Length: 151
Image 1 (cartoon, rainbow, N blue to C red):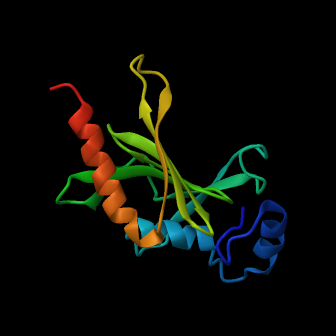
Image 2 (tube, rainbow, N blue to C red):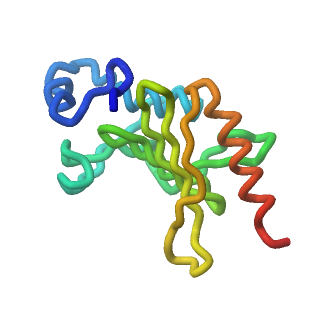
């Protein structure tokens, strides 16, 4: 698997962090672009080395649980936007959670919905899309999940 230019594998990432004096992390920039955010407000949250080799995850916003409007017309909000060294994780409240991994052939997206038992998440969809199709994909997957819910 080849990452997008500027996004490095874990062993290369550590070297990149040391030389990145501007703090312009390419995964943070991708997250900001995908979710149409202009303000760079990421906070480091400590995690285990098995979760992220840096020992932390970048979490967006002063209150990560706060719901932020992504698409007003389709009533899509997100929360818990987290940037790992190799992927982005986000929740769409009451709809799904997803992981977004940039690769050379596009964004690899895995969508998880809550199971019928209510405590776990099950893989709902996995796909590869071009970066510029992210917004339309998010709208379509949100509408599809809503349409499958019992009335």
